[in-house]
Image 1 (tube, helix red, strand yellow):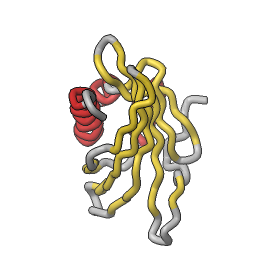
Image 2 (cartoon, one colour; image 1 turned 120 degrees about the vertical axis):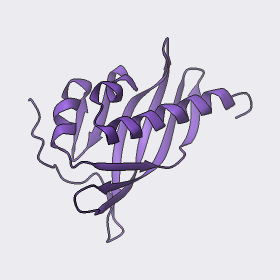
Image 3 (cartoon, rainbow, N blue to C red; image 1 turned 135 degrees about the vertical axis):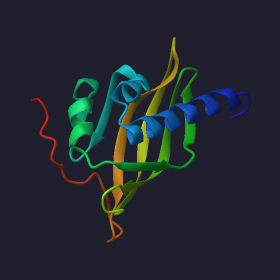
Length: 139
């Protein structure tokens, strides 16, 4: 990890922007944290950036609380990481907990998320990607 402190800080700030923009409903800001070919996986499917507006619109609203990511560099301009998440729904204050498994890529605009996959931690202790919510996609 020697010499990668600036990269770790930049990736951490990128992930903070993800949590803040999705909490505030800022879809444009959310899309900016991804590479143009970026994707999000959850609910048994993988969604490209073009589907983010509909996916986020169909999702419950609330507060995304994230912890510091554990990052491993896989190359000079690539990395992978895991970040814990606690989502609190605004209407009920019900919680969902889990973690994101990510890949990151350094671009001309700095580090960006390339892939983000959600794993939920169930009350049973099971870890899984969940079932689809109201979003049906464009396909």
